[in-house]
Length: 95
Image (tube, rainbow, N blue to C red):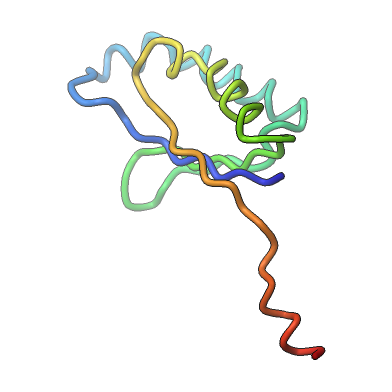
């Protein structure tokens, strides 16, 4: 199951707090990417927030995966998880 994870920064978190965990965060994202749980990682063009595409068996697995990130563990950010499904509109071309 593909899951879109949209980062939301928690209010009143200083840049210094992010910097404290930035290297650990990058390492954790790299490891989850190497394991295949994170398939794609981006930053939004309109603000400094991450957008991840995960490949997990369930929303629960996605939540467990996201909870391993240092920024999440240290309550700097949260993620909104959006389950995705294949676009069904192509069926109209063949019916």
